Length: 459
Image 1 (cartoon, rainbow, N blue to C red):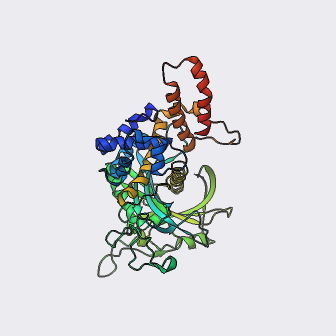
Image 2 (cartoon, rainbow, N blue to C red):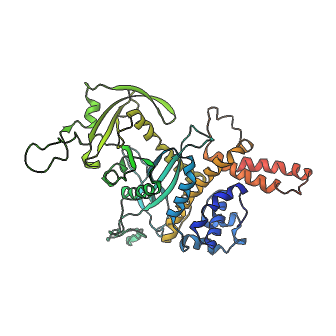
Image 3 (cartoon, rainbow, N blue to C red):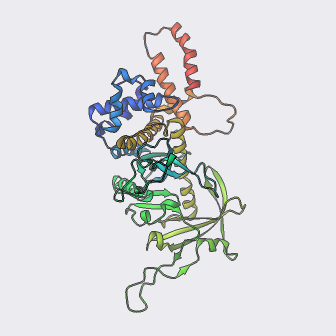
């Protein structure tokens, strides 16, 4: 195996050995290390060139690793899941969401026009061409930063738009061909359906343990809430005009089948606007801050989404008027309303994960044109992100003071970021490479020390 990273990183990579054949595992080892050390744009050819992997294998072997080699993404996700279990509480917290990887080129497999939340305004939606990835992550607090919650992706699915039999006219009247990899009617799955599939997989891995899944309003519909495993609960956002019902009566008043829902109740919007409503005032910890909120809570049926399953519904009002009225629900009736609000706020950690993999690991850079390579490259970047965090939790935090860069303008920074962790891993690697030679004398170490300090500042 190529010795590219610090030796303490090797046990994490060895945990994935059962997922590959021996040639594929050596390619995985080399690519994972090279991806971490590479800086700048991370196309596959640039990753190969930056780490000089051509001296280890022919460059075509790394392309074939993604497009032809026999390995399964869910097996890699299960390995990450096993590595995360020692850091997880008794009740596991997960989240599901989707992110857009922008691409260019009409021959990019599986790409299409998707809503771009970063470029869109409330009144003017914006669409970008690229891949839409649905991600399931586990939320974990590590001992090196117990007050911070990290989202670590363990399962990933590519959302493919349904194939349109009629092609729109493109430039110069030619038929538009940007449908490479579009799904047929039989292959098509919505994003909530893909999320439900991943939840089912993780629920089987858990055994007797419990799982709470966090999702935005897109993942609150019947595709998920009506198909939850017995050991899984859902916390999500509810539309303000949702039709709510009381429980049906135990006995039917007349002949016929028993009713599935009771009397119609006020929807969350009317509850929020009713001047006679009695609000409960409390302080909750949301997004790293203590926030004063008013809320109302009711247990009711949202039949259009969850069917006959009773939900705990929380309508929230901001007394300062800075935030609009909102509504959340939980299928777990043992949770109190403040707990539901604080749990839903943890979903934001997955958005931070999306930002980190795009900014520091080049999530949007690979330009694959083959089906299997497209569906494997981006998820592998998520697993590399997980490995970097796991390395820091196991041994890297002990080296963090040596790699820390002093930034006096961050006066209120109290926790470590992924950028700090990635710099720590690179710094530990260069320290081991430069000063690990026992034959290096004191004079040579003195000469090389400024080089190590320069690497720390630029890593």
